[in-house]
Image 1 (cartoon, rainbow, N blue to C red):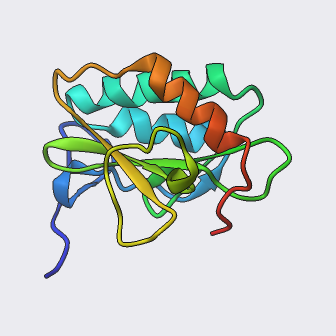
Image 2: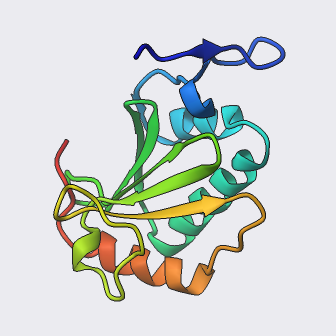
Length: 145
């Protein structure tokens, strides 16, 4: 099945199937902020909140956009510990080393090390739990992609 694409109002980026922004890959905060700005509707607020939580919890965090998703890596580590991606009805947060977190993030994966957290519209983010997962995940070797 081919991916569908659409253009949001104005001259913004193409939105892929499920409303995920198509943003060129790049290192640093700029591409991540471009991705967040292009997230449709309520998802942009979720993206801003997630990005702020990561930046506040992991000082000096590395950022990049790869495969049309923001990625986050711990300073001094070449790997990545977190990513997120827009789907039609939710934002999927990927903990790349999530199987080692306590408690486990709720969503399982076909990959034994990965765990997910799906955030739906009007759903509260447990910021204390999320920050705890971020501290744990960023303290472990990241996934090299």
